[in-house]
View 1 (cartoon, chains in turn blue, red):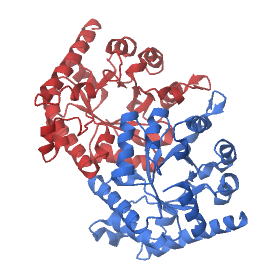
View 2 (cartoon, rainbow over the protein chains, first blue to last red):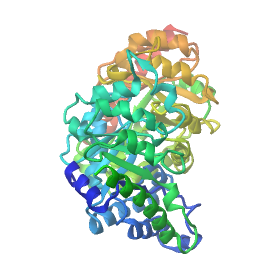
View 3 (cartoon, one colour):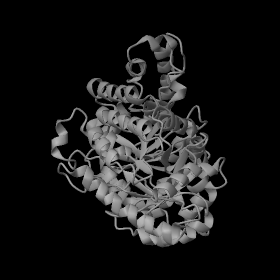
View 4 (cartoon, chains in turn yellow, purple):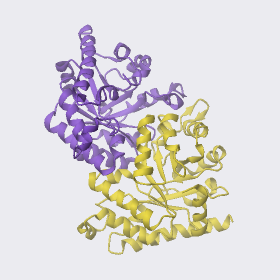
Length: 273
Length: 273
């Protein structure tokens, strides 16, 4: 998928919602545990109930790895289900990978080709040659951690690094890398006031914004500082949507939570139309 | 495993060699491709031929993920084989993970409990609450990326961050985290001259040093600047050992390369005894 197709989908659905599929067997409805593949059964139900309200799905790979082979099988089935039934969805492997060049290429092939995700999140610490292998694939995106939503973001990301805060150095430096147009950036919703500064460095690129909902970020603040003429935002909610209920109505309850966020997004898009 | 046990093993074997199991189906002997699980067959042969020469094995998870479910299966079989047959070996999942707290806990359980690795490599960018979940497990180690062996290390890691180079800030800050005694650090062999400075910050902790061999680092330089009274080094070689031959003698050829490194290490240990 390219950025124009993503933007078009946002306009059509009046939504820039990304739903995080962070599946925890201790939190899903108990009756699903009798299914052959409870994780996939849960994802399938959530996706079927919410796909018209969102433009992207983001499984965090840790939740799947934690269940070993069964988890990876469930992840593969989930991405296959999305690509077969809802090919318009932008799919993000939230994997936070990054390694020396030949190893990063391995990860890129795993997520872009073997599993056919549209995008993968990447940690920037190892620099250019750890990220560029992820930028070598047309119509695929590497989503670089810039300013994350957690408290630990202030340990290193906001240190003054030769005149610019580290996260700004990361953003600024990355714009010079080959195929930088295939970069997006993670900026936590809990750091919305930083978005204005970030937009000065990357006016056109998409930002993936986690932290609305359970982590306390405000959608209005994120839009105020982060939105650009092409919208340029994917706002993620995970737990706040998928665990809205752990009863038989879990998919409908998730859809209701997604609908509430979509309506807020619709209002913002109409205000800025 | 605890650090004393690791140190004891180093003294017994007169080796601080770590062998990187970065298995690439295009590089292993062709006849192995007929095996039911060529990756595991390769690893098993390498391990059986080299275990007396090294103290640690380090599969880089990217190489396994690239092969999807079969890759994860091979990784699980490899760690099970090590834990069953060579429980004295220190096992490192080179995964470079790191995420917000509840997600890092998932990764820790996946690698420490489901797969029973002794250690996992961690990216520091997201700070304290992304790393501490990995430090909550007794006799397990989180190996933090400090100064990596690749060229991109100079993009961010060596920036002056409020008076200290970023990698030093990472090291210094991390020593205040809860259970910091369960931290080790990655420092590339290609940056051996930095090891003296690093030893001032962390005199006692183990360093995992990749980059000897294929990447061009020097064992002598690493030992000169990085060794402490408890040795405190795990020097990794991957491609230089495991791909010494792609013929039927591949395991013996790997053992010969490992033996050559072990003998260099033995000489250094005797010099410093």
